[in-house]
Image (cartoon, rainbow, N blue to C red; front, side, top):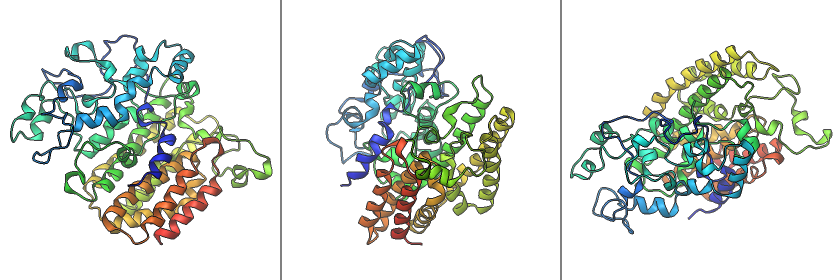
Amino acid sequence: MRTQPLAVVIPLLMLVAMSAAQNAGSSSMTAPPPYDQKAVAAGKYNGPGGCAASSCHGSVQPKTTTRIFQNEYTIWIAQDKHAKAFAVLSKPVSERIGRILNIGAPSKAPKCLACHSLYVSAEQQAQTFEPADGVSCENCHGPASGWLGPHTTKDWPHEKSVQLGMYDTRNLEKRSAKCLTCHLGTADKFVDHEMIAAGHPDLTFELGLFTSVMPAHWKMPEQGNPWREVQAWGVGQAVQLRESLNRLARRASGPVWPEYAEIDCSACHHSLTRPEDSWRQERGYTGRRPGNTPWNESRVVVFRDLAAEISPNAAKQLNDEVSQLATLMNQLNGNREQIAASATRTSALADQLVKQLDAQGYDSALTLRLMRRVARDGAAISIEGERSAEQAAMTLDSLFRAYNQNAKPANGAEIRTAIDGLFAQLQDLSAYAAPRFAAQMQRVSDVVGR
């Protein structure tokens, strides 16, 4: 069993469940739900207790005679950090964030409850509902009252549950979008520079790796597809880019601009060195005036390689649009309207690739090509900053996990060691050094081949 990647990833992500105290904009517990959810006549949220019976999803041991293991609730409550998301709000650092932001106790603040609990209006809460349950079953699977009883019927199809309000997490595009409502944000709940300054971690996400560090309460390989993890990674990359560009367009059109949460954090927050030791000054400032804060391009640097592998023509168009957007973002006082329009156009290109990536066939050959392509880009990725390096490390981890499990390369242990070395470079944000990360990416490239 592999333990080292988990040990280095968890500190990096600042705990998956903690990555989403957001802004719901209302001080009332009766505010509307902060994300789109299919409404049905009986669409109330019951809370996880409705799933907890041993004959449902609360079995202590996995069942072998049923379609599901029936221990999904047991795994969630005992092992999943999402179950502890509400409790995080009472920790000292969270309390301090609340004081700095002047929002009162985080455990009562809509700004935080929006993602650290199941935050829905009082009208949608059944009698068994309890916000202190944290991020629970219905956060991801939708309000259960419409389908809770019927879905236990023999031969009941998943599609009928979806019609009655279940959120379709089998659909990778919808699954990614659901995760990103908290791990990236929406118009109604988000982490901005003010919250980061108060102590909240910046939001990072990669569907493949974030899924792998969750204790699985689903059968693997998912849907009997051994390359489903690579498919999920690809779709997740496209959806994340699309939604991040939508967020940028919203912020450029919003009341606070520039919004420094869209900037590469480590460009300002890094250890100061003597000029002769500065890799940033040695690199130079291509495409921007020295001193201008650079756009955080982490959500596109790896996606470029994926797009180039799957659809070269679409990749060229995407690169052209991203270059224009970067030019606007890297100006001292970029035009907000132009930035919003450019981000919207680029988001539309990413959206066009979502369906294509979902329909793409994935196998060992494609997975290996993707690993090699990303690893070869190590020098270019590394100079984009720590967040871009982080995305590359998470991507290589996700791709290798599937490749190692299915292709079983003879040098698998050597590849794993090289990838773990990437995460070792990401433990201290302020001390990130592009040359060291690039050198480690070269080691990965050497072991995966060219």
